[in-house]
Length: 128
Image (cartoon, rainbow, N blue to C red; front, side, top):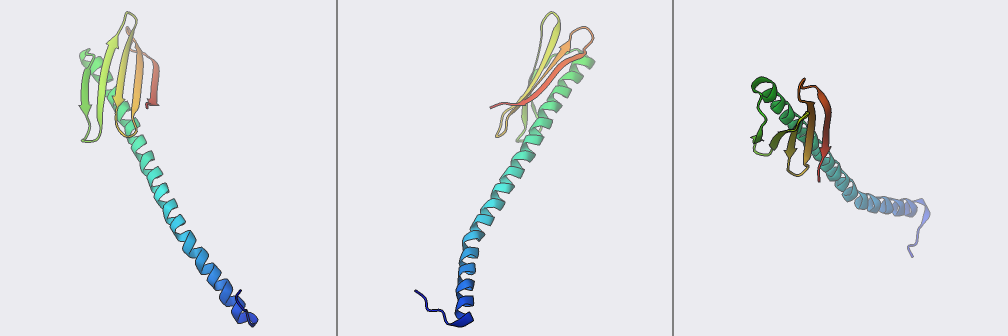
């Protein structure tokens, strides 16, 4: 055991313990910052992907209203965002879908009334 003489030894011992604890916790703080950065990047990517599939639905809706076309194609927004568009219809409704595959994939679905093109249902969800 360490022989402590007066206050000097006690202060030295406390300083040694504090320096050791600081040395142990600095890597934990750095790791926490890395995790926070990854979470932020995932949130940014997810937001971009939601906007991409919603833009795909708007693109399909434009072609449906202006040119009366149902699309079945791939839309490349940039090198990382490629949205697959698909338009289908039955007797009463038109179904528009937009899918984005990637690190955080999303799907969007739009159900329209065939006669008036009134939006019945719109869903945007994360697909796994």
